[in-house]
Image (tube, rainbow over all chains, first blue to last red; front, side, top):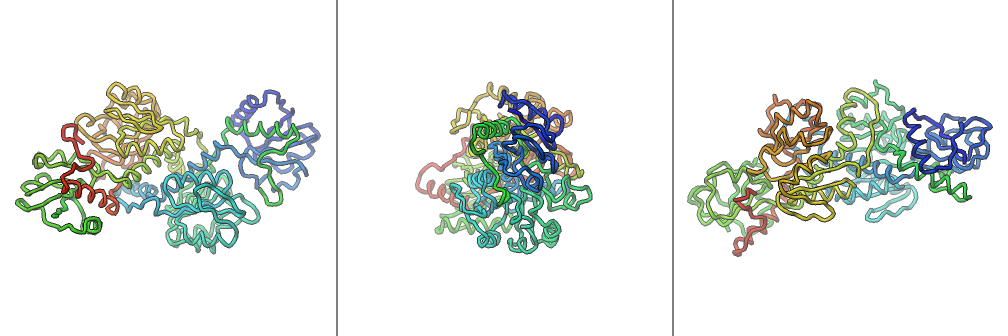
Length: 308
Length: 308
C-alpha cells in the first residue's frame, strides 16, 4: 500500500508520524503526493488547498486532526473519495482534561487567585459546591461526550446540547435550535466542542452571549470561527461575562497585538487543548487504512453535506 | 443543650454558623464561653489558647476546621474532654477538586501557558497522557482518599502513602517510614494532605526534596509546617523542582515581602484549598453533639497521643 503524508508538519512531527505509522502498518510504502502519483491513502494535517489534486487510485483521505473544516474548504478535493476525521480516545481524553481544568478553575476561582497572587493579595473567595455550578457542553461527539461524563463524575450539573439527538449516559441531553437559547440562559459555564460548519459559524455573537446569565463564562475549545471576537470582548468589558478560556481564534497564531493576550479576564491557550498524539492516533489511522483497502467504509467518515 | 461558638470567625461567618447550627439543632441555646459558664459543647475555629479553660460540664470540643494542630498546641485544654475533627464530605470534595486542578495544571502545562500568555508567546508544549504521570498522595484520611480516588478516575498513576496501613479502593497504598523515600523517588507530582504532627513537621526538607526526580512538583494543601520553606525555595531555584502549588505557609496571611508571592514557579492560594461550608458542616457537628449527649463517642475523635 502507498501512503502519503501531506500537510503542515514540522520535521520532528513528520518523523514521529512516519515512525508510529510504520509500526502500525509495516507493509506501508511512503510516496510523495505529486499530481499523477499513485497513492492509496493520503494522511493529511491541514494540507494547502490543491495539494490532493491529481492523485491516482486514492481510496481514503484520513485527517490526522479532529477538525476538518479547513480541509473541506478546499474546492479541489477529489470527488467521491471518503474523508475520515481523527477520533482517538487519547485525544478525547486530553480535550476532556482541558475542559475539566477550565471548569474547575472557573468554579473555584483559581484564575482570580492567580490575579491576586500577582498583586500579593491574600483573600479567600466564596466557595460553591460543584453541584451548584451549571455547565453546558455544546457538541456531543466523542470529545463532548467524554468531557460531559468527566464533569458529571466531579459532581457538576451538566447538560449537553447537539444539533441532532444524542444520548450520553448520566448526562441530560438537549438538541435542536429551539433548545439552545433555553440552555444558554441557565448555564454558568458554557464549554464549546461543536464542529465548525455553516450552521455553527459565528454562533457566539452579541445576541447569544446576551442570553447567558450575568457572570457566566465561556470556554471555547473548538474553533475560532464559532466566536464573533469583537462581540465576546464587548461582553467581557461590559462585565456581563465573567471570564473566557480560549484555545482557538479567528487568526492563529494569535497576532501579538490582539487584545485577548492581555485581557485580565481571558485565559488563553495556543490551540493546545488536545494535541494529536501520533503514538495512539497512528493505530486509529491504520485501522481505517485497512478498512478501505478491504473495501469497507472508514470509521468517522465525514458527511460533506453536514460539514463534519 | 448549651453551645458556645469560639474562635477566629468574622461576624458574617459567625452568623452563618449559628443559622446553620440552629437549623440542625433546634433545641440549642447559645451561651458565652466564659470561665465558670455551663457549656455542653464548644464549637471551635482556632480559639486563642486558654479560651476553653474553666468551662463547666463540657462534653465535647468540636473543631469546625479539619486540622487540629493549632488547637492541640493549647496546653490549657481541659483534660479528658473528647475533641473531634471536622470531617465533612463537602470539604473533602473541595480539597479533592483543588488537588485535581493542581495535578491537571502541572500535567498539561497550564501554569506554563499562563506565563506564555503574559509574554504573548504562542507555543505548544509537549503533551503527555495522564497514565504517564505518577502522582503520590501523602495522607489517606477522608481528604487524601477522596483526592486519590478522583485522580485515579482521571487516569493518573496514583500511589497513596500514610503512616499507618490504609486501604483505598483502586489506589496502591504504601505505609510506614521505609516506604516514603521509595515513593518520593518515583513521583512526578507529590500532593501533601498529611496531618501536622511531631512526626510530619518539617517533612519536606532539603534531604527529602532531593529524593524527588528532577522536574517533579510539590502540591502542599495541608499545613505550612510540613515544608522547610527555605529548602523548597532552593530546590525551585536550582531547577531540581519544576513547580510548587502552595495553599499553606509558616506564616499566614503570607507576608507581602515573602518571595513565594513573586516566584515564577510558585502558584499560591490563600489557605483556600478547602473552606469549611457551614451548610453541610453544621449537620456533621450536630450529629456529634447528639452522640455525646447520648453518651456515645463522637466521630473522628482526636487521639491526643498521635496528634490528630
